Length: 378
Ligand SMILES: *Cc1c(COP(=O)(O)O)cnc(C)c1O
Image (cartoon, rainbow, N blue to C red):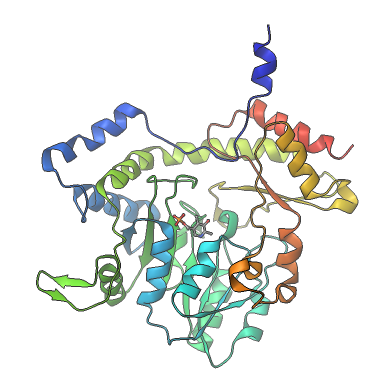
């Protein structure tokens, strides 16, 4: 008798990791029991590398323990001058900014555009000084940055471009894999991302020399059995994670297609509502439906972002203030950066909520989420 009520009240998390069946995973890891080769670039690592190269349509790829290490070590392998400036966005996950700071480089925050929340390319040139060495943009929510304009600026001033592509697995722009742009692009295969290897990451690049430097940074600086000529870390992807990646890769297109259905249902329910801004559809982009951000304008919507967040929480629905706070306001930086210099990012971060989105989210649950959101307008 109560089961219906309980069903209706079931909690909805903001995300749910994609997994193969247990049988498929067991099948994939069986060889590991024969070889006893658990890590250090074994057959699973090599196979995943090869399959991803094809799937992502890139020239070269290396795999890492996680997306952050791919990003941090890619930046290190660039050998940028110490204390030089890297132009980046504060509207991102902590990882992007931390990768810069942990390399002894200085983040310089560029504002975002209010349409797709990527770096506002009209503001980049004004931030360039004689200390600028690189640009580190983020394809945030899976939205593609203005890659042409960023490359034009980089070429004009001799800057490197490192893309944080953590949100853009499988995205294509003008029929090219998203990681074909810039000097290097880094993906995250974290459990919460569109494609996961439990934890994992990849860097995609074009230069052989860069690839060799990067490889040594993920493997203690070891060049050969008796030669260690770099001060490297350890960021190798192990065989169990690579096996999970191999399984999930077989289903990722299906997963993205299911995400698309969820996003379409959200759009049907929320498009055209006064006070709500949705994520745009970008031209020439094959999207991956990674996130469902909604911007709530209190004056016209009638409720603030925080009120909607609370209303959803009361219904057992987990939304996320993603990205809030901005990275240039983090406590660890002790007020070093002035967020009023990135006013659009500040504005959006106070109003944004990402709603639950994953392949197996039922359309009835999307309806329940939308009902709860729309009730805040009454
Ligand atoms: C997830 C994420 C990362 C870091 O990836 P991990 O695999 O969790 O280390 C970096 N940047 C952005 C924007 C992310 O969302």
